[in-house]
Structure formats: structure tokens, C-alpha cells
Image 1 (cartoon, rainbow, N blue to C red):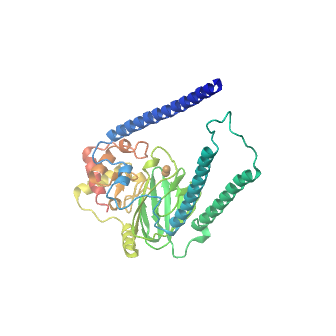
Image 2 (cartoon, protein in one colour):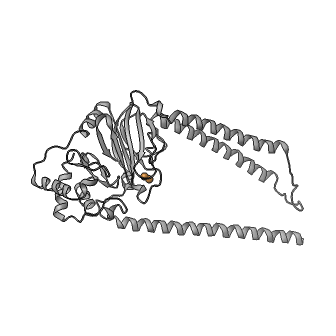
Image 3 (tube, rainbow, N blue to C red):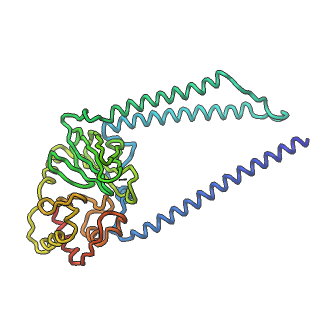
Length: 377
Ligand code: CUA
């Protein structure tokens, strides 16, 4: 009789401990959630200017025809990756089901039955069972390891495996933007690049400062861009369309604002784009535009930004065809007159820590420079 009562007390204590643990977990998670949403709101307030988008807004546009889903494959390489991912998920689901079924079976079949005294019969050391749960996981891990190595081998090229008809695209990671160069057409651009559909694209990856990682989920897996080491990467896009990507290696405060946009075009449209990008800017006649170019040349702009035939800076994004790009500031803002003005006024307000300083231009100087920039299409 006393034994039963002690047992009941123990049960109650165990129940109470679990109840407390779950309650505390819920409270901590709830507080964390509230803190996160308050932080999010204060960030949103900071960017209350209607023209000032965050990179996430660009990703989240509900009507956008692109996305960055890792479940969508638009190249043979990503299909291989997806196949492997699903294999891993299916095996994990299989393991989960088997373990849970055995667990629930054991809990019901071998629980203490009413009327039984003391603990149920304890069993130790079944050789067949111990052998099974050692050997089966080893076999699963070996199988996963082999398929992973095979997948990596099939998608990750070595230098000597550049396809003969490939288009070379040099990708250089900068804090915090991407430089793209297509030597075949003398193209130098930033953050947004076009490539032809169906033709192998041979990426030559480098970095100007720290380690970045080039990742456009629908076209290829991640590949690091490392200073003083060249990596090679390859994909062949199946379909035309716009594919977004993101730097995937933490590279400093503005790591989140290093957007990649790849426009996959039909061969003809790509060639037209590339030839256009290789052209110097058109002649300018408007007085305000000429004044803007003078200001651009008088201030530090020219030291960092290149414009074909005007300035030779290579430290910052090339501006020769600035207006052909949809976004500025590494993908933070739509590229339009108001945002260009806001950016010139104080880049640090929009992208704190970036290398572009506020040049203390007067309002009319900013208007002139933006008028000039708007001609660079
Ligand atoms: Cu570049 Cu993260």
C-alpha cells in the first residue's frame, strides 16, 4: 500500500517537472518571438522612405516571376543536387518511421501492466539487435557518402573540364557587390549579368577581399570566391528567365546585401545584350548632363567607378551601363532617379559600412550627377 503511494508521488513529481520544463520553453520562445518582431519593426521604421526597399523586398515581391527556391531545378547540375537531397530526405523519413514504430510498439507492448508489482522485467545484451543497430546505420552512412561523392564529382568541374563551347564569365566577389566580366564581349558589369540559355557557362571565381560564396539556387550549388585562389564552376541553364542568388558566405556587416541576378536569355538576345554592354556610352549634349559628368570627374567618384572612355576606376561597380541594371547598392534599391539621389546623398544611411562615402555634394550637384548617370543606359 505504502509502495503504491510512493510510486504515485514520484509520478506526480516527474509530471510536474515536465510540465514546468514545457512551460518555461514556451515562455522563452514566446519572448524571443516578441523581441524579434519588435526588432523587425524598428528596422522597418528605419527604412520608412517608400522608395527605399530592402533586398528582402526584392525577393518577396509576390508577383515576381523568379524565386530562389532550392526545390526548383533549372539546370542539369541542380537536378543532380535535388536528386541527392530527396534521397537523403526519403532515407531520413524511413529511419524516422521505423524508429518511431518500434518505440511506440515497445512502449505499449512492454509497459507495466496493472496488478504487476515493481519494475517490469529488464533485458540486456541482445547480440542480434546490437549488431543490427550498428551495422544498418554504417551501411546507410556509407551509401549516402558514396552517392554524395558521385554527385559532387558529376557537378563540380576541374580546370581541365571546361566545355569547348562554354561562355567564360569571371565572377569577382567584393564587399559588398559582385563584379561580372565576360571577356569574349568586353562586358564589365555588377550584380546583374545575362547569359545564353542551353550553352555551358564557365564561371571563373575570385575575390577582391574576403571569402564570398556565389549561389544561385536554381542554377547551381554554392561555390566560394576566395582571394588569391581561383575556383571554377559550371552550369547550363535549361530555360530562359530571371534567377536570383545571394552571397552565401558571411563576409561582413552587409553580407545580406550582395544580391546576384542572372538573366538567362535566348542566344540572339544574349548576344545583343553583350554587344550593347561592350559599347562606350553615347555622346551627351544636355548642359546639366555635361555638368554632372564634370562633377563626377572632379570628385572622388572617378577613382573607384569606371565608365568607358571617361574614368578608369575598378574598385567599385562599373557604371558604363548603369541604367541597364534593375537594382543598385548590391540589390538593396530599385535603380531609379530618387534612389540614385538618396544613394549619392549618403550611402552610409542606406548601406552602413559600405566603401562608398558621402561626398558632401550640394543638392544641385547631386541632381547634375544623377542626370548624367541616367544617360548611362
Ligand atoms: Cu559576400 Cu557574404
